Amino acid sequence: MSFLNAEWRKLAIVNYEIDPNLLNKYVPHGTELDLWEGKCYVSLIGFMFLNTRLLGIPIPFHRHFEEVNLRFYVRHLDNGEWKRGVVFIKEIVPKPALSFVANTIYKEHYETMKMSHTWEEKPDRLVVEYRWTKKKTPNVLRLETALKPKDIVLNSVTEFITEHYWGYSKGGENKAVEYEVTHPKWQVYEVLDHHIDVDFELVYGQEFGFLAACDPSSVMLAEGSVITVENKRMLR
Image (cartoon, rainbow, N blue to C red; front, side):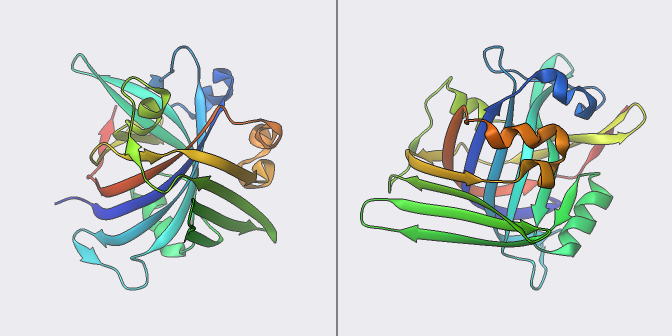
């Protein structure tokens, strides 16, 4: 049985090219940075969890909620095959119980904040917005897109960003936690406009504060799908 079943929907993805040296201390044991055409990326991602079940059981008041995370990309060589995965700098959710479970079991870096979202379909575009607040400072990630999604172009940066099916986190000295995330290939919407007003230093720490003054390398909106998060294993 999967540890978690849910839907991830309307994933607003903002990608920044970053100096890989800034991420070295976050790279879990047994993994290395995964680059796209020699470039290292971090991604700010906002989306909705829907119809969430833990070990097959729906938890009251914890089925539908927002998440915003900052992540980067790694790979792990396992029996001669590369597994492509993600590492989270921080994941923000609106429910304390979610943070407790993820931080305790999967050694992740969840933080609880006040959050909200808006999905609005206008005659000529879709508007998707995620909002979260830390120390009374509001943060906003807003995309305006075409109304209909399209298939992802093969061998594109969009495919690279969305096609990482493993999660990794540090599990202690010379150890890492590995877990699989399953989902079909997603479709994406053409982004027409975006607005990003995030206090990166306040939310993610001083070393990521410079992102507030950076233009994104790319901005995407993925429709998402049903997903599963499988049970963890330890890499030593």
